[in-house]
Image (spheres, helix red, strand yellow):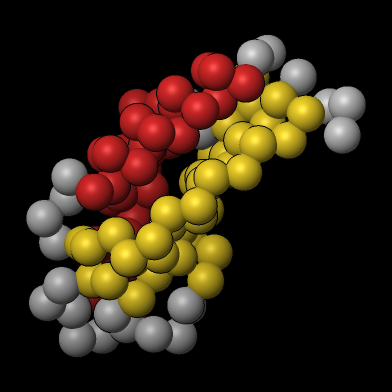
Length: 97
């Protein structure tokens, strides 16, 4: 069994309040969950209105599937014109670690 995680540091576009930030971040998280059946949440920069740190996790029987799903999640977020991906970091864990 493998667990993969993805951390996405985002710069949000024309956002001037935490309420506007939520209106950008929540649909992205919902789309990730719906489309790829992953666990996703806003995990950092909670008090900054133009930054967001999203965490995504997936569990699979093989490492290749984890990597494929996380890469697709990264592409989906990067395709949103209202956000810029500043950094993305993948980690893979095995049940034997």
